Image (cartoon, rainbow, N blue to C red; front, side):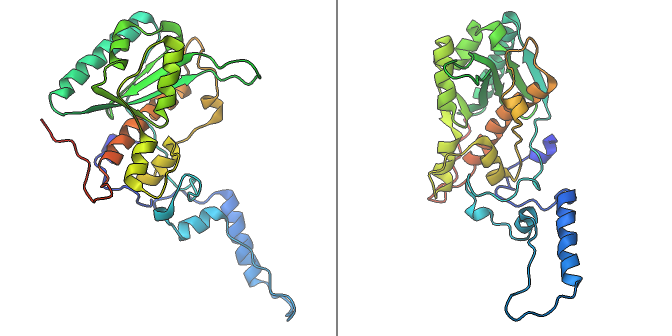
Length: 286
């Protein structure tokens, strides 16, 4: 996703029609429909002619209905462009490197505070899952923080721990940490590292306030579809992979950065939506 494609939020809840070419499955289904329609069938007054159905992906394109979309009844995702972070991923895995990254982040955020009343960063964590009964999941292994379209920090905490400057950032209530289900993430950080993440806001709760019709339990992927007409991929091979590996792979880095970026970007989109009174929730400039 190019930066210039993400400027502004005027395309909220719009349906994207610049879809990819039909898949082989779609083409086979279309050809079957056309073939059946050209065949001469013997007339039988007792049984109506059989009708073949187009694949649901094509039906969704013919009848888009985003206004009634909910996390459980979305239209086909296969026609939506993929949301991906295209900026620079800042990967840190040692104690000193993570501390330097946090120091840099604190400095940038302090500069932004002079220009706006509320600073928000996309926040997410990853850990190694367990698939054995009675075996607890691993500690928080990766933490990702993103505050704009150009840079995203991926911190490999399982090797570095949480240095003082990162703790200072996490405990700063004036820096808003945003994400879907972020309360659970903050709770896990506290259980694993005894550090309280302050200044958190759940995107799902915020979206329900703005969109109404719920409450729904929104995830990042469903919010990206609803508000941005984007597909946020969640491949199980990466999502449920080994986040405690000595060095994160390119796929893991891109997945982690994109999640944090999506959280930050969706917060901006939700903030700019009018509330039930029709007013836009804008924070005045200082």
